[in-house]
Amino acid sequence: MHAIELLIPLRNTEQAAITQRLDALQHAPLQAFSASIQAFLAAFADHILRDPAMRAAPELMALAYWFRPAALQALLARFQHLGELGLLRPRGVAFHVAPANVDSVFVYSWFLSLLCGNRNIVRLSRRENPQRDALLGILTELLARPEHAAIANANVVLAYERDNEISTALSARCNLRVVWGGDATVKYMRSLPLPPLATELVFPNRASWALIHAENVNQTSAETLTQMAGAFYNDTFWFAQQACSSPRALLWIGTPEQVQAAQSRFWPTVKQEIARRNMQDEPTQLAARLVAAHLAATEGGVILEGSLTDWPLRLSAQRFNATMRDGHCGYGLIYEIQRESLDNSISLFEACDQTVAYWGFEREALTRWALMLPDRAVDRIVPLGQALRFADRWDGHDLLLAFSRLVMIE
Image (cartoon, rainbow, N blue to C red; front, side, top):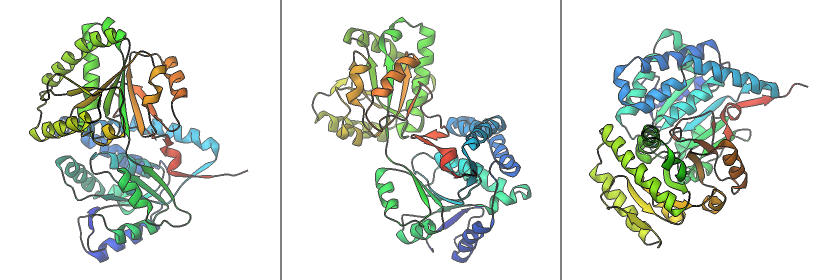
């Protein structure tokens, strides 16, 4: 295991020390939602929320808000309710393979597993960035405190490049393997064996949509439209549209005339929001959008709305097919599709579609629509502005249950 770097609890590259830390996980049992776990998570949230420098990273603020004491109590109440199904026990050791493109996801996965009483091995890529380094610095500092020693002994964070031998050895130690990443990562990890009684939870490539009722946009006030543009900004421009739940296609529901009128109000307001937040387009992102737009043009039926240098770059289309999905670069590229009713949009959606962030629809209409969608298509339907908000039910999985073992006592 010479290629591994131990990031938490202490930076180290010595094989013997790393093996010793991994061996110790077998003898560091925890209880789900114990006082020590909740105290550690509350300290983590408090550290971020009190640090003025963190306000420049809204995704980290959202992460801290998710694990503040009030949120932990809400999770505990739901965990206790799930306990009515049977006795919920930790699975044991969970091996988390974190995505490289969304830094905070590995913390959500790790901490939910920790709350359920699991010991954890978290594998990060070697790709460094300021936010990841800030998170690791906070976690290292907290886990070095004597009051969090039990948590430190039950968790290991590693970094290494893709390596069959290392990943196979870590998989052999786990009772649950959790894989966040693209389809290629999932396929690769599934080729590596697990112990017979271990289970696996995977989160592969997904695509997401915004869904907007055109006529309701036309009738709304300027103030509400500004709020709507802010919500769209949060969903689309955080993480540079790289998260699986970031909308990459926008479905307008209404007649062509209604949609055109709504677009003439909506997009200028979005651009005003971008300017208000002082966001700057990057040359590399512009280049990526241009390549993706030219690739989309080969599909036929794709029309450029505005100029190729616009940000966001809008492409009008009749569908959102595999070529468009696979070639989508993010960075403010938006496909726009119009349908006159929700019923007419069913054929647009595929199994890989995860989140739909909506505006202007009633719950009853969305429920009827969701019942007609294809098998496995769409796991989350949330208000616009909530697409990136992590939840303990994700990709159709209840994570509190998935990270637990159900023991029946009859």
